[in-house]
Amino acid sequence: MLELRNVSFQVDEEGKEKEIVRDISLTVPERKLIVVTGPNGGGKSTLARLISGIEKPTGGRIFFGGEDITEKSVTERSRMGIAYAFQQPVRFKGIRVLDLVRIAAGKTVSVGEACEYLAAVGLCARDYVNREVNASLSGGELKRIEIATVLARHAKLSVFDEPEAGIDLWSFRNLIDVFRNMREAIADSSILVISHQERILNIADEIIVIRDGRVDRQGSREEIYPSLEADSAEPEACERLIQAMGEKEGDA
Amino acid sequence: MDEIQRRLLLEVADLHEVPEGAYNIRANSQSAGRRSTANIEITSKTEVSGLEIRIRPGTRNESVHIPVVMTESGLKEVVYNDFYVGEGADVVIVAGCGIDNCGNQDSQHDGIHRFFVGPGAKIRYVEKHYGSGDGKGKRILNPVTEVYMERNSTMEMEMVQIKGVDDTIRTTKAVLDAGAKLVVRERLMTHGVQQAVSTYNVELNGEGSSADVVSRSVARDQSFQKFDAKVIGRAPCSGHTECDSIIMDQGRILAVPGLEADHVDASLFHEAAIGKIAGEQLMKLMTLGLTEAEAEEQIINGFLR
Image 1 (cartoon, rainbow over the protein chains, first blue to last red):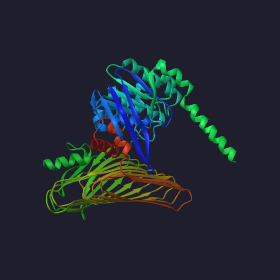
Image 2: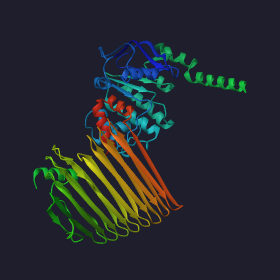
Image 3: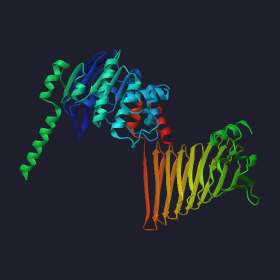
Image 4: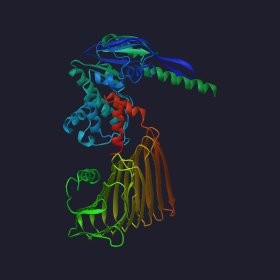
C-alpha cells in the first residue's frame, strides 16, 4: 500500500541543517492498522506530513500503490486516496461542518449521510451540521469533526496525527470505538495512527517506534507493546523536567 | 424589461417574477412597475427623483422591494428614497442595484435612503449591489443610508457587494434613541482596480441602545478598500464594530475603526483584522482533494456567506 524508501527530511534552523527524519524505510501493508509511537520531537508528525505531501522529503522516495508519489502534490495524493487528519484542526470562518464533510466526500452528500459521519465520532449531528467550523467550537469538537471528514473520504490510506490530543475523556472512549470500528470495517484500505495512547496501541496490528528521526524498532503489537512500557515517552519527559527543575534549584 | 434587466433583477433582489407585496422596479431611470398595498404606500417624490414609502403602524409580515437596474451606458442618477415606518411595524425591505454597462461611458446610481423607524418597529433591510458588462465605462454606486431609530426599534441591515462595481463610496449614518438596536452585516469583495470606501457613523444617543457593525471583505488583484467605522456613545449603551478582511494578490485595505465615548456607561468595542488566507486553511482543503484555486474559492465563499 504505502512504502517509504530511505526518506529523509532536513530543515535549515538558524543556519544549521537539522535532520528531522533520517533515512526512514517502512511499509504500511494493506488491511492493517499501524500505530506510530515514540518520544515527542522524534519526527512522527513530520512523517505524517511527508506522507500527505505537505512536506517534501529532502531524500528518498515514497510509493503508494506501487506508484512513486514523491513529487506529487497534496491534491494529487488526496485524489489518489490518501487522507490525513491534522493534529491541530484548522478553523474556517463561514465554512460549515456540512460544507467540510461535503468537500471531504467529494460529492453532494445529503444532510442525512453527513449526519452519519458526525454520529460516528459521537457528535449529535443535528446540533452540528450547520455550525461554522470556527472558534466557537471547542478543541475536542473540532478534533472529532476533523476525524469525521477523514471518515467521509473513504480513503485507501487514512493517516491520523495524534487523534487523542485535545480530546476530553468522554470523547476519548468514543474515539477508541471509532478506530475499532474502522479496524473492523477495513477492506482494501489501511490506517496509520500516530499515538501515545495505550488503548490505541492495543488495537494495532503493527507498531512502529520512531526516535530521533529513525525507526527505533517495528513489529507486531505482541512483539513491540511489552517493550514500550519500559520506555514510554511521557515518563521520560517528566524525568527530564524534574531533572531540569532540580538543576535550577541547585543554582539558587 | 429585457433579458439583461431580468438577470440583474435576479442578482440584486433574488426576483424571478414580480414580487409579492409592495414593490417599485426602476429600470433605466423609469418606473417599470409599482404596487402599493393596504398597509404600504409607495408614491413618487415631486421635486426630486425618488420614492416615499409609508408603512402603517402595526404592519406585520409584509415586504417592500425597490430594486434598480441600469443597462444604458452613460446614465447618471441620484435618487432619494424615504421610508416612514410606523410604530410596531415588522417588515422586510429589499433594495439593491444592478448595473450592466457595455458602453464606454460611466454609469452611476447614487441612492440616498432615509429610514424613519417608529417606536418598537422592526426592519430587516437587504441591499445588494452588482455590476456586469465588459464596456470601458465604469459602474459606479454611491449609496447613502441614513437611519433614524426611535425608542426600542430594531434594524438589521445586510449589505452585499460582491462583484462588478468599479467605484463605490458607501456612507451609512444611524442615530439611535433609547433601547434601539442596530445590526449591520456588510460583505464586500473588490477585484481588478476597483475602489470601495465604506464609512459608518453611528450615534448611540439613548439609554440601552446598541449597535453591532460587522464588515467582512476581500480585496483581490489591485483593488483598494477603506473601512471607516465610528461609533459614538452618548448614553449607557453598547457598541461593537468589526472589520475582518482577506487580502489577495496586490489588494490593499485600510481599516479605521473609531470609538467615541461621551458617557461613563458607554461600552464600546472594536476589532479589526486584515491578512491573507491562512496557509493551513488552504492545505487542509487540499488534503480533502481540492486544488489550491478551488480551496481559495471555498474559503472566500464561506467567508463572505
